[in-house]
Length: 290
Image (cartoon, rainbow, N blue to C red):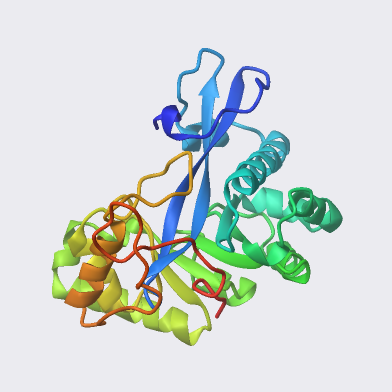
C-alpha cells in the first residue's frame, strides 16, 4: 500500500504511525457520490508503508481493540477537517472492537461528537473476521443503532460474513466481496449467482454495495445484477482527500447508460474539467438506509 496516498500520519505510536485514506462510494440510483470509506494506512518508524491486513492480524485482541479505536479517531478527525457536506463516512470496525464498544457506547458517541459530526453520517462497517460471540456482536449492532449510526457488513460471501450474520445484525448495507467479480464474472452462471445473491440481500431488507470495481465490465455487471452502491479503483483510488477525479461522472454515466438506466437522478451538475456529470458532494439521502 502506498502511504503517500494517505492523510498526514498521526504522531509516532511505538514503532508505527497511522495515516488515513478515503475511497469514494457511489449511488447507482443517484448516479453520484454518496460517501467515503476510511482506510487505515500504517507506516513504520522509517516511513515505510505496512500492509494493513498484516499489521492488524499480528496484534493480540486487547491491542487490536485499542488500535481499532485509534484508527477511528484518526479517520473522524481527518474526515471532519475535509468534509463540509452531508456524505456518509464508512468506518471499519473489527468484531472484537465492536464487542468492546457495546460496554462503552458514550465513548463511541463522544468520539463522533468531538468532531461536530452527526452520528447519522457515520456507518460502522463490521469487518469480515471471526467473532467469539455472535450474539454479543448483534448486541453491539443494536448499540450502534441506538446511537443513531448506520451499520454495514463487509466482504459478504467470505467465511464469516454470511447470511446468518446478515440476519442477526440486520445491516443497512452489505458489501459484497470483490472476488465474486473476478475473471469468472464473464460467465453467465456467475452473473446469475451474483444477481441471486443481491436479490436475496434485498429481500432481507439491506442495500448492497459491490466493491473492488476495477474496470467498466465489472461496474456494468454489478449494476445489471442490482447493486445499489459501487466502489473501486475504476471510480476512484484511495486518496488523502475527498474530491472525485475529473471524468468520474462521465464514467459513471456511461455505465448507467450501458445498463439501460438512462440519466441518473442528481447527475446534472458539472465539476471543473469534468465533461460528464459531476458525482459532486455526497448526501446521506444518496446512501439512505434500507
